[in-house]
Length: 250
Image (cartoon, rainbow, N blue to C red; front, side, top):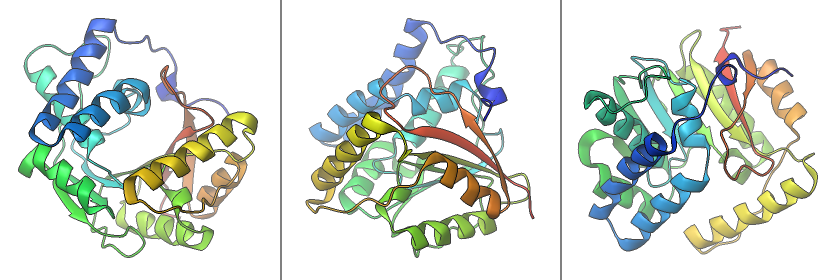
């Protein structure tokens, strides 16, 4: 499958611009505990998803954004930090301006993560403790699910995706990062890393329900999404793939 239009003809941010963004996104977690700040600094530095979403302009301007499995709210913090930098004239002119969002909502099942998100970002974001398998998604223009669906069984994955489609308007966007069970040794590394992270977060082991990339693409197509792969910026991505899916309304 060809790479998305969002991944072509782009040059990386300068080191100083990228550093400013990551620092601005991590700084709000000083209001939370030491672990939240440490995790924000490390995760934002090594995970390319946050800068990729911003640099590629994947979130349309004027969106009502919903982050499912939001954790401690790092995506929301990145989007807010980008907007602050742009307002100060500190955003790189090589890229489209960061989106002005109508609203940002985040849902996660781990109360401590939601507490950390609320401490860091306050009322700028509507965070809620809930299970994405049963939570009310309301209506959104852009929905983000990063490395979450493999924690729930295959039927639940499809149920969530159907409800995501119902929550989106025609041409609404789903930004989804998934593992590729056909990814060989890199998939195995990602698999055990994700199990370790889940155990650290909730002190409970959890089986993972993984699909091949081809299966993810076929599942999304069957549900009425057109999907493009998006090249991630440099960082630790293992076998994970970032997808941009558009609701066709079919």
